Amino acid sequence: MKTLQSTLLLLLFVPLIKPGSPTQQDSRIIYDYGTDNFEEPLFTQDYEDKYLDGKNIKEKETKIILDEKSLQLQKDDSVTPPSTKKENDANLRRLDFTGNLIKDIEDGTFSKLSLLEELTLAENQLLKLPVLPPKLTLFNAKYNKIKSRGIKANTFKKLSNLSFLYLDHNALESVPLNLPESLRVIHLQFNNITSITDDTFCKANDTRYIRDHIEEIRLEGNPIILGKHPNSFTCLKRLPVGSYF
Image 1 (cartoon, rainbow, N blue to C red):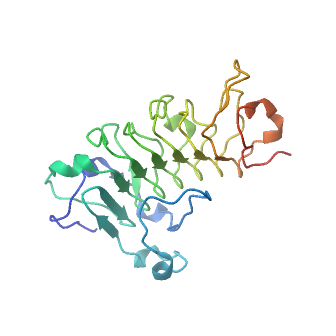
Image 2: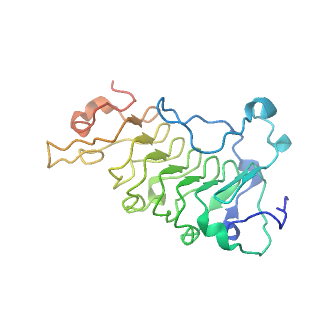
C-alpha cells in the first residue's frame, strides 16, 4: 500500500473514499474526450510511451501533478494520507482521480471544494455519484459501474456551468434527468440505455425550444434504436451519434 508523503498538498475528502478490491481494477489508462473542438484542460502527461498497452497495472506508478489549484492521483492501489489538513485545499480548481480503486464517495466529500471546476473520477469502481461541487465545468466518470439508480434526479440540475459530461462505459439504463442547459458535450456511449423520451433532451410541450449549446451527444453502444424516437431530437442542431436502425 502506498502512502503519500506528508509534505504533499492533500484533499480534505480523501479519507472518505473507500477502495474496492484490487482484482477488479480496470487497466485502462488512456482516454479521449472525443470532441474536435475541445482542448483537454486537464493534465497533459503522456502515459502512452511509459505504459505501452496499459495491460500490466502492477508496473504502473502513481502520477502526482500538484500545484495550488490542481491535484492528480492516478493508478494507485490505495490512498492513505496523513491527518494534516491544508487550508488551501478549498482553492482547488482541478482534481483527477483516474484509475484508482474508488468504490464509494460520501455526499459531503466535496462540500468544501466550492471553487472546483474540473473533476475526473474515471476508471474506478463507482456504483453511484455523490453530491457534486456547484461550479463544475467538466465532470468525467467514464469507465465505472454506475447505474441509473446511482444518480439522483437533481445531481446535475443546479450545475449551471457544466459544459462537458462524460458518463460513457458505465451501466446506465437511462439518460440522467435534469441535464443543465449549459452542456456542450454529453458522452453516454456503451451503457445499457434502452429508451428516451421527448423530454430527455428537449421539451415536449415547447416545439420552438432549441438547445443551443449542445455540440455532441454520443449514444452508440446502447441497446436503444434512436430512429424509433424522432421527436426526442427536434431541439438539437445535430443528431446524436448512435444506432438509428
